[in-house]
Structure formats: structure tokens, C-alpha cells
Length: 186
Image (cartoon, rainbow, N blue to C red):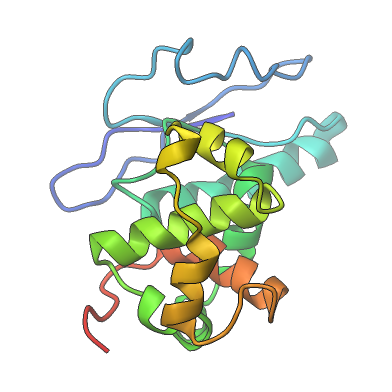
């Protein structure tokens, strides 16, 4: 587990601390509602592993996940498991390539504007939940009746259905929160 400290006014954070233990953390132990994480502090949790090689691998995973969390500020969650941001961690090793890829795949959805970004987040949740409106609404903590079909809206913006190029679309949606300064009008 890596704890990323408070960010200073320059947008940089200290290196934080590290915690190691012999048993894995349960989902309940890492639930942000039950784990009192102070404002501005982020916790990044690597997958459990054994021995020195395992510790080293977990540390490297946490370092990459930390980068993703710092790039996703201020929308990063208080507690992040490395496995949940693995695609974004891999994809943001080269930020310029990530930006080019996301803009190419998402077109007008690749923006910092609130409404398209909200649609992209909803679409990512929908794809993750196999387009189940009930599960997506539960994940996003909204009522299912308020969830409009993100696929239709995305089709209008992207000019194609969400079933076309799904792996690229999923990767681009995973990378989007880590990119700042995307164009607002295209």
C-alpha cells in the first residue's frame, strides 16, 4: 500500500509512505466510506505478493498507479487498487501518445468539458457493466430511471456505435481521466 500525501499549491505531492503486511486487505477494509482518508490524501494499493520479488513488483505497480491517481486529480478516488487502473497506468507511460490515441478514438468526447466528460464516465461504466442500466446506475450511485442510454448519445458524438472498436474505446475511456488540457471545442 502506498499513501500519497497532500498536494502542495504547485500540484506536486510528496512521495508518501509505504505499508506492507502479511495478509491482503479486504474490499471492506479499503472501502473509502469505512476508511477515514483525510482530504487531499490518496491511498494506492498494489496486489499482494510474496518475498522480495513480490514486494518489488507491488511497489512498481503502486508507483505507476500513483502516477495515474495524481494525473486524475481532482477526480481521483481516495482509495485506488492498482488492478483497477492498470490500463491507464500502461497507457500513460507515454503521455503524448496517450493524448493522441484518446483524441483519435473519442473525438469530441475527448475534452475537459463537464457534460462530455460525464457522458464518457457513464459510457465507461456502461461498458464495464455489459450495458446493464441497473448495474451502471448502481455503480454511478444514481437512480436507474435517471440514466439515459449513453450508447445513443455516444453514437451521435462519435459517429459510430459503441460496439464498433470496443477495445480501443475502453482503453481511451480508461485514459481520459488522466489527461488534462484537452481541447474544449472541435
